[in-house]
Length: 196
Image 1 (tube, one colour):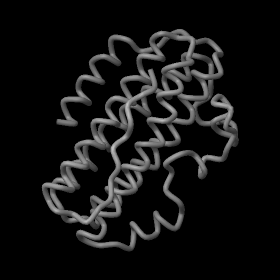
Image 2 (cartoon, rainbow, N blue to C red):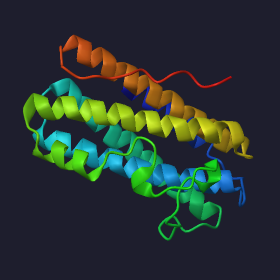
Image 3 (cartoon, rainbow, N blue to C red):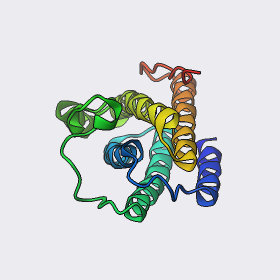
Image 4 (cartoon, helix red, strand yellow):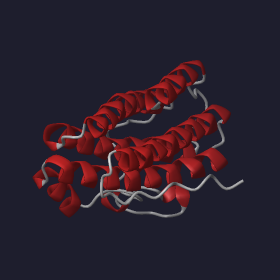
């Protein structure tokens, strides 16, 4: 199911890649910060592909690797289009949301200790920890995407943020179903719908 959601995202993104936005701090900040946020999702996905065992969990990890790698590439290209260096970026994140922070303290980011625990876990223990960490990670990403969807000046950027938020909400619902179907002892909370 997530594959179809991602394919829909990819098609929509190809049609409506935001090419405006100029120096809109919301657009620039969102693209920079979400790229950093996505990189940790890739890291966690690679870890569970090495040490997890539940095929459905591994499938989720592969979908995240494909989908979020694609999104990082598109976001970095958009930053270049806007005259921004996607690599050389400020140390402070989320200033565009009025919540200046460090990358490590962004909403949903796993701590160094949690990442170490995921690396050390094996089998079902790794699957459970991955699902819990990734669901929390997605919730943090949705928090940022919802804000960008409300406040970015570019209609296409707002659409991009809405697509990201929608897809991550769908993935969390799929993780909840996966946990129930495979009777994994994981605690996953649904992400509330966006504020109207």
